[in-house]
Each structure stands twice: as structure tokens, then as C-alpha cells.
Length: 313
Image (cartoon, rainbow, N blue to C red; front, side, top):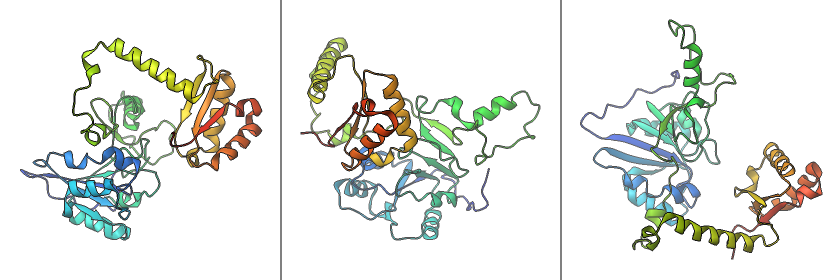
């Protein structure tokens, strides 16, 4: 599938560098920047040239400054005040080979940039782990656990048509309403997990010395870890029995839609010895969810929804 607005591709990187562009509204004090702040500077500069297109203005945070510094002055472009056409034209002029969407369907996304098809290869990564169900995202960077191979639309189509002499009778349309389609993108698998974490770089000074536990038997270390976790559990929820199951979700509460909340209540009702642990994120959400839980599932189930503050002293 090729859209009608596809721009001419950039020159191939023959004996040169592949130019990768990252587009995000979260190059600031945001979880995505916390996790990915070192990624942009860790590319092999002999093979790749990295450009970042920031669709939000700088908040002056250390995360923003680090990414700007690692990418380099001319490689970090603040496009927060630009309209879509100007951003698309800049990406085309920058001769980007691979454009990576770090937002997906999240707050601040500028997916219309990708819908204009300024690059021959367009991917999504980190910000949104689900499918974009579009004809303008070619690949999702994932792993076999979060995105099993059987869930990609092309694989389902291949199995339905594997006995045909030709495939001329059907075309892959990523924007059709076929219920068999889960991911319209192809999967680009990481060797272990797709999820990026900056702990090794961000806490390098604190972990400069070898952890003494690394020389001890794994079973012994894990036994100590279990003791530590049980102690924390009892401090957090002193009235819980040891066989109580704790379900938890630490997202902001605006992400809890009615359908999801209804399913959570059904799970709580079906598992009597269980609680649902949520954050006061924000605090005004707690009484609203409690009231809704009482209406939908009764006071007993509602009483098993526990809230704590975002930061615990």
C-alpha cells in the first residue's frame, strides 16, 4: 500500500550514513525522555546520522538538555511552532531515510506528519506499544512477547491464502475493518525486550562498583529479595493476608476508561482475596472511582480498591 502523497525518497546511503529522524512531543521531563535520553547519543555515528524533531518547546529540564547535547546543535530541531506542512517539508529536505514515531496515539502526537509520508520507511517505537492501524506506519519495533508473530496482519493474510496459486485475488489493506487484523505493521524484533531503560547510563556513578551480589548464588540473592519485598508489602498494606493477590496499575487515572474499569471490577469480584492498587494520580480521581465502583460492583468490591500517593515517604 502506498499513499498518494508519498514524497520522492532521499538518495540511498551508498558508502554514506543512514539518516534517522525521531519525532516526539516528549523530549522534556517526561517518562519517554527518562527512558530514552541516552539512546540518541549511542547510535554508531560512523553508520547513522540522528536528527530529532521536537514538537513541544523546551522545558529547560536536564533530559531535554542532554538529548540536545548528545544529538548536536544542528541535529536537534525545535518544530513546536511549525505547522504540519512546514515540518513535513523540513523532514523531506533533511533527506531522512527512516522516520520514527515516538508518540503513537498519545498526548501531543503529530501523526499527521507521518500520514503525509515524508519518508520511505516509517516506524513506531516506545511511546505507544499498540498498532496504529494505518497505512503510513511500516514497522513497529517490538519483541515476540509483547507482539507475537501470529498477531501481524500480513501473517494472518498469508495463512488464509497459502494454498492459492497466486495472490492476485486479494490485497492487504491496513485500513480495512477486518476483525482478523491486529497489527497492521510488520514487526522489527529486538533480541530480548523492546523496552528501553536508561538505568545503566543514568546511574552509572552509583553502579561504578561491581554489585557484591553478583558473585553469590542466584537462589540466595532471590531469597533475600523476596524477604525485602514481603517486608515492603506488609508496610504498605499491613492488614492484608499473605495469600491476598495485589492487582496494580500506576498510570494516570484519566487513562482508566469505563470499559477497562468495569473489567477490573469483575476481576476483583471473581477473586475475593484480592485488591486493586491505584495511585492518586490525580487525587481528585479517587472519590469518583470509589463512587463508581460502589454503583457498579457494590461496597464490598469498592472497599478493595486501595489508593496511595504518587510519591511515598
